[in-house]
Image 1 (cartoon, rainbow over the protein chains, first blue to last red):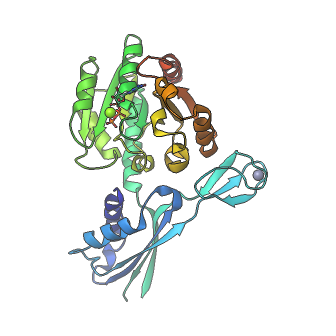
Image 2 (cartoon, helix red, strand yellow):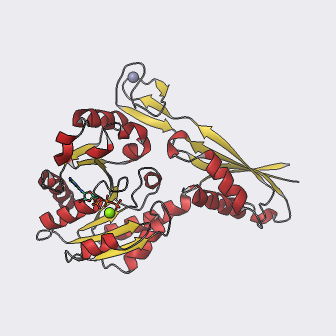
Image 3 (tube, rainbow over the protein chains, first blue to last red):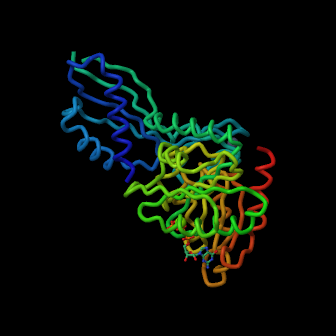
Length: 114
Length: 217
Ligand SMILES: Nc1nc2c(ncn2[C@@H]2O[C@H](COP(=O)(O)OP(=O)(O)OP(=O)(O)O)[C@@H](O)[C@H]2O)c(=O)[nH]1
Ligand SMILES: [Mg+2]
Ligand SMILES: [Zn+2]
């Protein structure tokens, strides 16, 4: 259950990024979560909703975009999605592949009231 | 409504401290490994065997991470090696700041090999950089040969796989070839060792790998 700590980090980043807008209401916080990060969306939402009570984020909504895991083949250059099982190129079966997405854990945008 | 574009890594704070640790390790010429596994795969046993095998040749220090108790640190202390215990009080993984704090109570100025034993958990510790040179995942054959496929992030982020408890293979359905095949399909560059902390088999090649890394430090 490390989602609580991650939620806390998200809240701190939002507070830091919005400190110049302290009189405006924070509406939405958008985060990107890669498929391979092992973060459970429900636990993250639960932690977020629990931790924002009594802060300036209270009433805001956390929107999670799940980013699928993708690899690029170093032999033939093609890109394929992986379902979390095997890291090899769908086209030429090469295992020399580079992970190009799936490990994201970022706060991307914050929506505030005018 | 206005939108602020942020694009900030959620774990940036951890990464900053991990890089501070990494600089400190570099200054002291510490070779640092982060041992990861599910509970009971044999991390502490592997540390004990490594100490027994290498103690006369290299200076070792250990950081133990556990949810509760200092039992693992007591085991290491018995072998006469400097050890610091981190108790996470429920936390499911070590974070860089906990390691940084532990370094205050552990003098690593003349340490050659620093082993950090992470909290037993095959999921959460994978995402947290501590400043180590290598993540080493320990998987015991009793856990089954399908585990790399079920916990891909751990095997993808590690550089080394130690397959432990090979003395128990005769009693199990686990195929070591299948296990290796699965692990390498997730991460083809994994370096693999096979060990038994009960019989001592394979400890020599594992320690040989450590020593070759010390020389290149
Ligand atoms: N048969 C056999 N048993 C082993 C081997 N290595 C460890 N064990 C046993 O497995 C159990 C767990 O070993 P530990 O070294 O405490 O495992 P750990 O990964 O440090 O456990 P946690 O720190 O609690 O996650 C102990 O009873 C060990 O004696 C091995 O190679 N073969
Ligand atoms: Mg242990
Ligand atoms: Zn290809």
